[in-house]
Length: 417
Image (cartoon, rainbow, N blue to C red; front, side, top):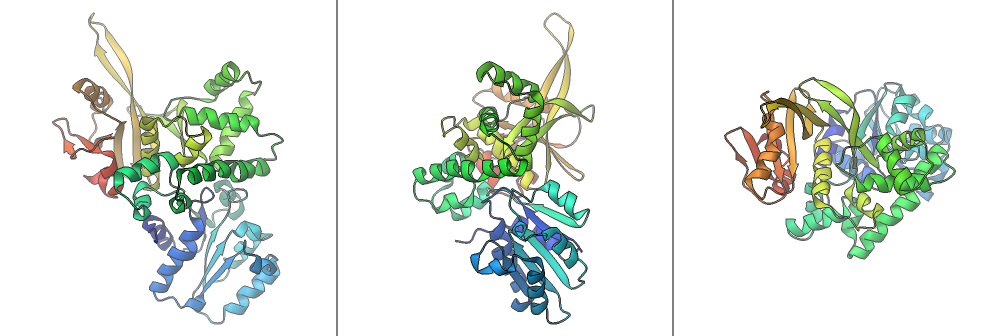
């Protein structure tokens, strides 16, 4: 079954003929090649582009080995570009081509050429795009399958689908596997043979144990406020490690560069400024997070929060953790300040949403607790509480919308309810 990834196809469509190299980045095995070579190529053909004006090269195929020489590859392109019509060049695993930066920059001088490429995490990250193309590379970042995309191919109801998704995540190949044993082994192997290997090779690390320990610490604390100093304390108290603060900071950067984890910074909503520390870390794929802990800590409330964070990001929003100060009188009549947290502040252009992730609201006390930070905000932006169970979307007298998680994830327009 074909999984439609319309949000990414549309991003590529929006960038057609913009004079830049369209660079699809993302964690390994998240579907970059599928997006470019199947879905986007299908769009080009359906739009009337002749097949011979779409030039595809998969550099990781053995039968294309002869083109892993820049001048030979350029000669191949010239041979197939026989007229002045527009040509679409789709290059998969372009980092395998020696001097690929020079090749791509050279192609930009051709007026009738539109270039799209994918690259692996070991050599083609967001930082590389900025460095190598100096304003002429346009990045489209692709995430593992969202829950809505996952359900396009899942053979079952949404509740069993969610049960599998929250445990094994959204890497597409997990949907082709018949048993949980296969899924578990696949995710565990990916970490050892691919993701960690990429980071170690790229950054020339001599040993990986401290990097693996850091991953485990982050996996155990998703959704919790932390910072490098707190992580260092954990290393010293629990692992009796001599790792330095600078090493932790550097390793956190490596993990973010490789799209394993992403940070959500704290934002002072009323003060309109970022707070340096602490912050939160979330995994790009929750299945990979669970694999780091050998599937021993399901922790669905925090996994739900991680899924919501990823969902908002793939919808194009910048996502921060909100901080708001509430001042009130205590029982003794003394005015005190209380620091409250908004799980997510999602911004896109002039749009803003305040979102609380609440796995359950069993009673009125818990509801008021989740509402407290939202009620402290006096602006007119929409305020939403997402709950883990099934509820009819309802707006209360305070203007706060309460909605169910699965319905929210399955409807691309759910923020506008």
